[in-house]
Length: 542
Image (tube, rainbow, N blue to C red; front, side, top):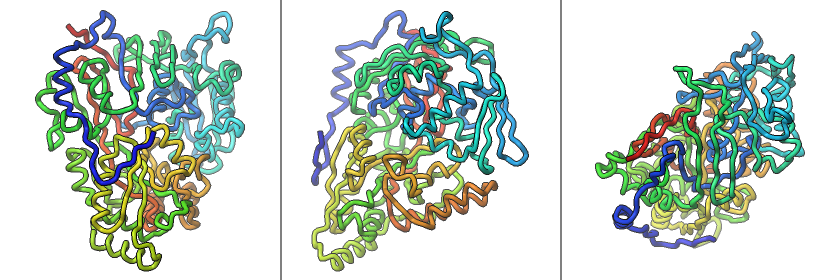
């Protein structure tokens, strides 16, 4: 269902009253086994349990519990061994040789035969990569192997990858969930329905999924990793997800003690939880732990450049919107100071290529002049555009709506549920869409692939359908350059081209904010906000 917002701000329910009533008439779950189950809600839903199709943060976080790859990231985004216990890179930078562990087993399944499981061997990575590249499967993750010439299993324990040309960021690509190992017996049997029958090697194994209702994972008793004391991971017995579709309901469940974890900040509850300067309020200090840290995430509004709207086609209007609102003021009032205004380009702070000088600063006079110029040249005296967003970003869009209407541009705001918006964005059905981009690995190429003309949706991530010969040339050239400082200059140049064409409206560079119940221990925090539950423990509540 779509809701049209004109000129008034949506009024949220008064959470303090609701929370008082909750406290008066309910108690948190206190079953004897509650401390063994980690519960959370995923308001944006889960699309798939197949790592080859895991393209959203939500899908990545759940696939991270079910699957492993050759290598993995720690909370500092350092690349560590995974199923590969070590690797070597040839002097020319084109050959990667991985030596696999021999104690990694797939989750049990009758299709494995008598023992119901088997060890992972190098040939399983050959199958997994072949599957990822299969054009018939049309997996969105197949792009990660586009610089790969060949790969092969030398024997059961040695897997080799040969690149077409040196690419220093390649080892980071292999940490992505796309590159997880999957067994041929299972994927062949289930075909496209593997998305709902996942068998991997991860710390948790699949138990049950009722789409849009709940998802349950159970502990993998045979998981290969241990803690520093030699205790086998994970500590938890189960993970249980619900799919309440809005952040306010999710927060109320957290306040009740029915879920253990809350990720991110939403307008519906930010002032209930946080002070104006971004600190946890005293009323929650006894029950809640708050963690915040850097996040390689750019939040933005994108323009669909193949729209038939004269306003969307106009660079003047696109730039006017960028100049027409104060990002610093927006962050202070709508995010309690959490996050950084996106006054630079698309590449966020913390990645090579970020440059604060290439973006848009608040210049209302310039914005008004651009709108007036459009009116004069086009003959359209009442220009109008529509932004489509999910409900949790409604306040940002309404803020921009109010500011731009002061300058002579009418803005409508439509609200869609997140899964519906994702589909509409990929199909080119919305003129201006709210979205975000989280780094998958530590190289700005990950961000700039969104500008590459060969990555048009629905087969890639270029939601804008932006095409520029110079930007394409710089993107191709970046793959031939090993030195990061040289690549950084190309990345900044590409970002500058996108900003000059105003194909998007960068809003802010986010921060990771995590809230957990006090009895939850061991949940870390990382700059890509990937959920890792291997080390999580829950203390019993009395």
